[in-house]
Length: 290
Image 1 (tube, rainbow, N blue to C red):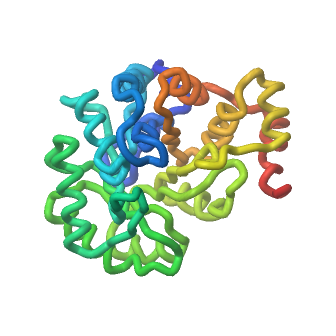
Image 2: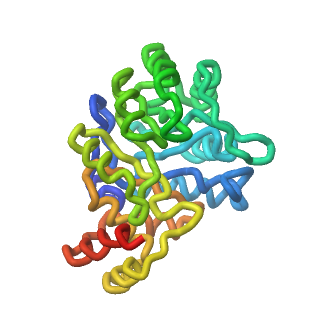
């Protein structure tokens, strides 16, 4: 792996108890699907070009799921990148599916979870997933039962390592009592900072934290203070928001998504940005103002 690549500028992270090491700047494939993460992309050739250029820029961690599309992003990844480079880590997510209207339906029964992993493997052309995230629906969901299924699939050779998504600190503790957890994928960004304490605790344990909606998701981040810092740095607000996340904690891995190569380059370049102490203080204060 070229450590001088743009994606390598923020350093690397090794998932705990694994041999998997990745650049902290990765890529999320969700936006390669059609509008609202449903259906085919308007430009499939550009989607495949985005994936190939991501690797050229040094991205070696791609986040995907069979329920993006559904099935669209996994198919595009295989079309664009198979056979996969040895250094590439593909991470998927299970625990939901899409109906014919595009609604997100949560489901975590044993048979469904197993079939979900098998379907991801088939569509990606893999024999074993490196990391599979279990997607929960909220802090009141029972995580113990599906985590036991995840552990069984791990022991059975379908997946190497387990991550969890959309979880509380209590659910995280229950999950870790059942099986090792190598990453947590939750909603977090410059403005939405409910997980501050969790991030610090995970950093002490050496566990990765992978924020989804790092730029606000379907409602892009907007803050006068962010805009001011971006103007002073001569960068876009999006780049500065990503740089803040990388600066926030060394266990944070980023997977910003896009369907355009120009935007991809801008996102990845954020790995090389460095915030001054003054800018960091201004950005840290944004959440308290909301």
